[in-house]
Each structure stands twice: as structure tokens, then as C-alpha cells.
Length: 120
Length: 133
Image (cartoon, rainbow over all chains, first blue to last red; front, side):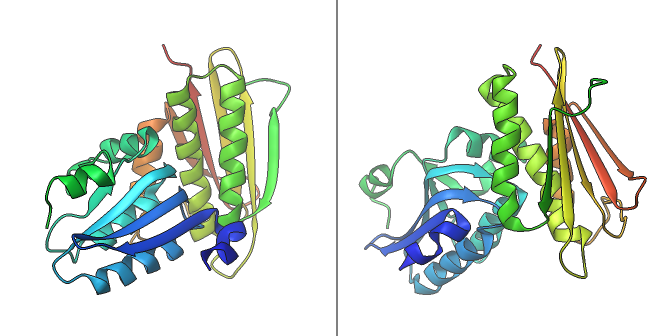
């Protein structure tokens, strides 16, 4: 279903509800061309949360810019606990560090690490 | 950079879908010129921010063009992003969301950033990236 948008936006977004978390997985560049799609997915995921964490799997995001950062900040703002970023890539970490926004999020190396840590 | 003019010159419709192409071209040019991976990423992000400003802010009444020129020599790479829009030079006090953050990122990643009104109207952003010392 998401595939209908692949050619236009260079982004694949999937959402999965687990016992401990609602996980949004991204694959592609997070920029002005893909911000709307990712924002919509994160808003939908947030609406499904009832005590779980919001987890954003960034393993396959190789690029983020100021527009993408605003998407993350906007999604994180209404949450009771910090949004969890899974495996942000080197370029993404560098931008988070540069803008001093890395501390706004929790960060894990893998989804298994997050689930294994007994997060509820 | 050189009297011979730009190595690469792109004229694109100023739309979000153009950004990925610009990123590929300028990062590829930096890589071919021997810039290390981190420096290529700097170029990719900073040029993307300049182009994003054009897409978001230059043409309030609809579509327009965005020109990107890049040149490299032994000491640095220069990328110029130009629009033909209203000629509003971005300013840190703008209420437009994200404009300030994008400018901060450009300033942090490039060795020199110059924003000016272009001769034909519109705005020109010139980014210089020195080779890693």
C-alpha cells in the first residue's frame, strides 16, 4: 500500500504496534519531500499510544535536514516520555549533535535492545 | 573559484522532489574531488538547506526556478544557489518555521556563507567548503 508512494517520495513508512511500543520504521531520506508522509505516520502512531512508547526506527535513514528535525520535534512534543530513536545513522547523529537536539530523544542501537531492556 | 566558470550548473523547478537530485549531484562532485565522507555530508546538508529555502520561501505565488552551480579547485568547493523570486533575503528574525535552523546549519557546515540579492532579482546563497585541513 505504501508502495504507491515510493517513486514520488523516496521514503517507505511502516507502523507496527507491539506490546511495549508503537514502532514507526522509516527507509529513505527525511526532508521536505517526505516530511508530510512521516508526520502523518507519527501522528497516527501517537494517536494509538495508550502508555506504550513511541519508537522511530531510523536504521535506514541516511539523510535528515532541518525540515526532518522539525518533524521529529513536533512528534516528540506531546509525548509524556521521550521518543525513542533506533539506530540513527552517522549522518543523522551528526546533525542531531550539530543542532544540540540529540538529548531530546532516547536512543538505542537496535529495536531488540529496546525490547530486551524491559521497557514498558 | 575558477575563471572557467562552474563545473556543474543545474536549473531545476523549485519543488521538494528536486532536492534529492541536487544532493546527489553536489555530494558526488565533492566525493570525486577527493573530499572525505564527512565533508561530503557537510556539502550535502548545507546545499540542501539553501535549496529548501528556495522551495519554501522564494515563490509565494507558485512555481519558479532554482539554479545551482558548483565548482571545485585545489583548496575548496563553492556552491551557489539562486532563485528568481521576491528577493527576500532570509533573516534570522523571520517567523517562517525552520528558516533559522536551516541557516544555522549552513553556517555551521560551510566555511563561508554569503546571502545576497542577486543581480536579476531574487536571492543568492553562496556556500564555500574548504578541504579538510
